[in-house]
Length: 169
Image (cartoon, rainbow, N blue to C red):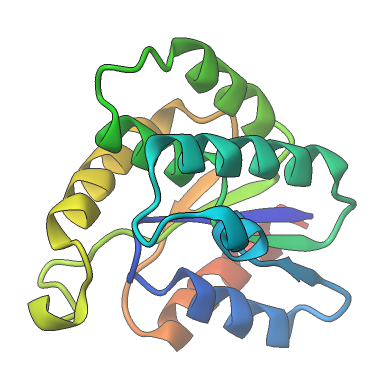
């Protein structure tokens, strides 16, 4: 099964991915494209950096086997690109994202919780984070995949995903 975890920054995607990995023997974790490609990026990634990450994420999903967890995926990467460069026509990229997400068995959406579990001082670029979260809320139902939205503590989120996976068997 291919599981993609999506959400804005500082919502706990990586922590959730690692918690799931502990409970899903035989699964591998694909760390987010930013960390795999980071050597060439500016301190604050540009629209072109996000486009590179988007294309890399597409290749990761298409090239992966079964039993993989993707920490971040084309959905949130495209959301960042759109928020950073709202004048860019992303129609073709959005269609590509929908097609790629058809290869994913489950999308785990980790939204910014209300009240936010992160204090304002802990979050870099809080406005960007909020805008991306809003956009993901708008897009999440347009994906060509099964989606679960999780909330609560890490163990609660993990258990929500594991319960959903059991239903899929």
